Structures are given as structure tokens and as C-alpha cells.
Length: 126
Image (cartoon, rainbow, N blue to C red; front, side, top):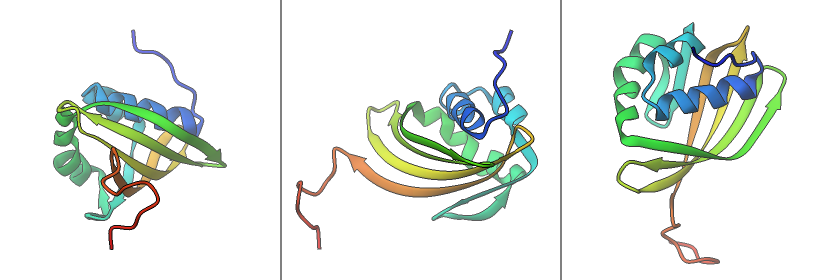
């Protein structure tokens, strides 16, 4: 039986990341609202159907998300995570997620950097 999660934004966001890494489409579909919008440097407010058509197939590449920061403010949750791909590659992203009535209604992804960082500590790549 699937575990019950609270409707708090931080719990919904954590459950979405877990479902994505587990490739559990049924679980994530239950968490994503019908009017969901996804924005990233490559996606400008795409709808739920486009998200599942374009982004969901990439779940096969992900092994896990290690949460670095997870902060809730009202109906929003900021999360910074280190993503681990099945290839072993790691990178860090930050997302602003909006949750209403226990459903994820919007995600804004801000791409980070590869791990380990490609620029030496204290240096600029310029």
C-alpha cells in the first residue's frame, strides 16, 4: 500500500522527487495538479501533458535526489538538491515549487552546476 504523505508543500515536493527517481509514474501523477505548469531554462510554462511527454522520459536517467535545502513558505517550497544519474554523474539544481490542496501546481527549475564543480575553488572560469 502506498505511503500517505501530508499535504504540506515540503512533503509533496519530497514525494515528487522520490517518485521521479523511482520512475513511479502513478505516484507522481497523483501529486501533480491538472493545471500544472513547468518552467526551466528550456521550458516556458509547459502544461502537465507536455511535462509528462517531454520531461518524464528523463526519469530513466535519474538514480536519486539528495536534498541539500528544503524550505517552506506558505504554499511554496524551495528545494536545492544534488541529482545523481544512473551513470554516476552528479549536478545541483534549485527549484521553486507551488503546492495547493496537496497538489503540485507549478515548478520553476534553476539549473546549477556539475559536481564536482568544473571551476577550481576560488576561481572564475571567465
